[in-house]
Amino acid sequence: MYKTEMHCHSSHVSRCARATAEVIIEKYLEAGYTTIVSTEHLNDDTFSPEQEAGCWQDRVTHFLKGYHSLLEAAKGRINILFGGEFRLLHNNYSDYLVYGLTEEFLREIDDPRYLPKIYDMADLIHEHGLMIFQAHPFRANMMVTEPALLDGIEIANLSPWHESFNDVAQIWAKRNNLIGITGTDFHNPEHTPLGGIITDHPITNNETLLKTLRERNFSPIMG
Image 1: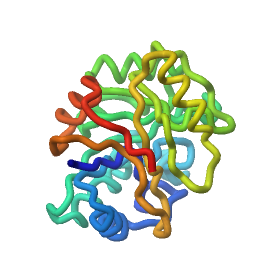
Image 2 (image 1 turned 90 degrees about the vertical axis):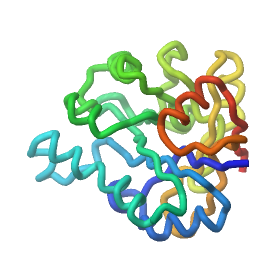
Image 3 (image 1 turned 180 degrees about the vertical axis):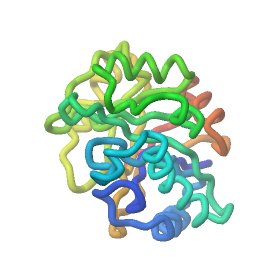
């Protein structure tokens, strides 16, 4: 069996995280994971004022540092995939995990944080063959998103520092036939990897990840 983390942040990009890539890799190897999806925050706190005043292409380069740092630290011992956790700048505090992300996609679009509504973000993501899942949809300050816009949701966010009302998320996913994943929401060195998905096949690239999610050919790790 193969374990894939679906929600992981590093200190290289996500300002709320304190774990370096080196710490993350060792923690996940020890916990028996075979793949980590890097999902750095892309929100109003990702960039410095100087970066915000600059161009989107420079911001993309900074955003990629988390993924590249994990790749370098992994040294081929664990698969690292590129994803993200996006938030619109004027859409309260709702966060969306994007899977299948590529540098090419980011460099050919404008800053997605400035899209008017989640409808626009969902359309953009789906037009490019990517998938969008709402992270911890029932945490305080989240907006419950129209299910038709989403591929799925986190049915369990396993951060010990937040109340995510996972039981409600599980009911919501079942009621609306949404794909249900879980995530550790890893941020800090003392965090224990507990979430993600289990498969009977290795997930070594984004194509396999997207196919696995669409076919629901996995079991969620519930901690």
